[in-house]
Image (cartoon, rainbow, N blue to C red):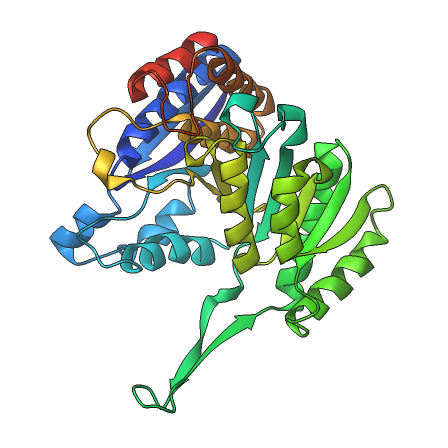
Length: 351
């Protein structure tokens, strides 16, 4: 029997509530599929920061590298200035653990949840591979003449051949493994960002020769957002840079039924990865037992697939689909018809 060790970061707001449901389902999956795991809980987040003034202790990154995976609830506290926790925890862990892929499945489970007219589950089933360690998120830039009428703010999108190539190669290999339409779309802005996306497009075209079974195409990011709404069925796997990936995945979440169903992974293919619901901490709902836990449960499924427990991960996703289709009311309107804990129980029962 395989044994794993997971780091749990419940985080802020409703994060602990949805993590509890995710762990409930993980525990059921472990029992059903014959593996064990131990978990260590870390209190990184707003309350710790308020208490200690410390965002992450110096030992955090080294400790987290000893785990098989990280399960994160949410980061963001109403009493902490925006950016402090996000940069100090989320971005630091992504960068220091070299989680250079952000993986976002976009899958509609039931057409009742889709705000688009006449779109069905078979029309919305694609994955966005977002570069997660470079671009505008490197934080490079400067002010010139700050506070004057001549002020200039410069923000640099920093892209390296190494960073771009490893992201693209992951996307090609993921497209092969996904084995659906085997179509990979590069999303960029080559007509305006003529340095950064020249590098992306050249590297993309060079790598495409190594993967002749993968069909490739290109779309500007503005056209991509239009087609997400008009023709989402065109897409299989999309690869893009850090900023564009951040933007289009939120639109992807909306067309699949909202943030409450959207899960994501911060992936280091050769190291420790971190999985999370992407909807944020939703502090106004804290303690009310009303938040949708399906995104966190699906994040747990992604975690299992990443460590090689594919059958368990797939079973969780199928259980979530069934519960969404047969039990829940209107996810897009935030009306589940069940409490947070009841939804977790329904998924466990279905599993």
